[in-house]
Amino acid sequence: MALLGLIDAAYLSLERLTGGALVCPVGGGCEAVQSSAYAIMLGVPVAFIGVAGYAALLLAALLSLNMDTVAGVRLADVLLALASIALLAGIYFSYLQVAVIGAICFWCAIAALLDLGIWVAAFLNWRASRQAEAAGA
Image (cartoon, rainbow, N blue to C red; front, side, top):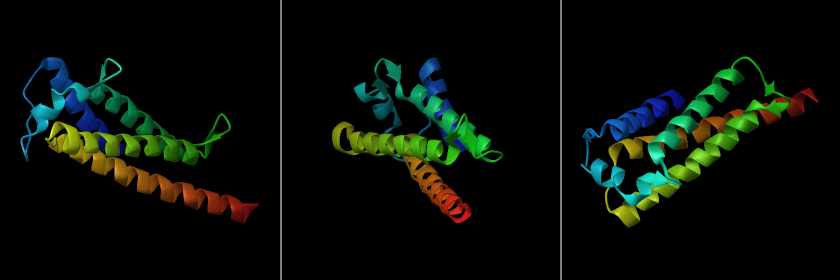
């Protein structure tokens, strides 16, 4: 799911850099959302932040396939923290689209759904790692 999110955010970033027209398969609100004042946070396009966030999630997920900790930090905790940040961002940006901008971006909606899926998977992984740790102690 993080790889799909990375591809989604990379597409939005590429369109932002090239100034191309977004392909919006459903709804047609992509341009309105991408050209709104809310598409930039702290001077950085939100799509660029999405690329960094999904890349971090993907890296942590891949690392967790072969190890439980990095530098003494549990990867299950890192994944859940990153996923929680992504989920909160997805909720916030979904709110902005519906309540403030008045348009829904298909690609942003996909990202928000991926954020939810990633959070559920990260939470289940975190819970399973806690249970395994408790059983082994």
